[in-house]
Image (cartoon, rainbow, N blue to C red; front, side):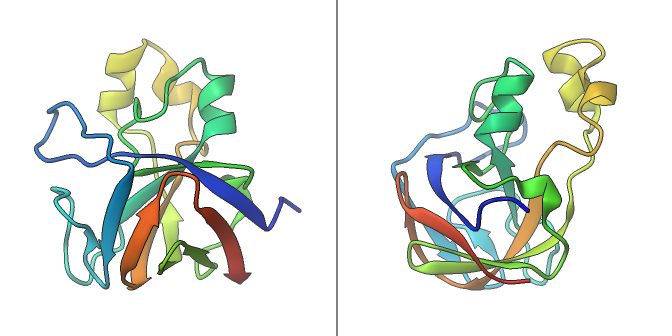
Length: 144
């Protein structure tokens, strides 16, 4: 069983496809939409916010934000969490919807990385309760 608490190591907002990501210290999660200003916002979507743990990034020699995650976590092994698991971070609450399969963009980072990262590219969540999240906030499992 992974830890039930961790922290937000960094935040990333994609304002356009393939554009460099912004790295704010504070972001606003909007209920049933995603992070304010992120291009992937979609009402009712299962892929509103992508969470990725820093430990997995480090294992692959990657930097926070390099796989275009929105929230980089530290201390929670995300790949062990099942869909339906609820998390709280800062003033927001999230529900895990599905694992993120590595896409072609991952192969652009380093040849062979897509196959290596299978089952380890983080988890998509939807925003259940909107609110501010900050770098350094506790992120914790509240049910699941």
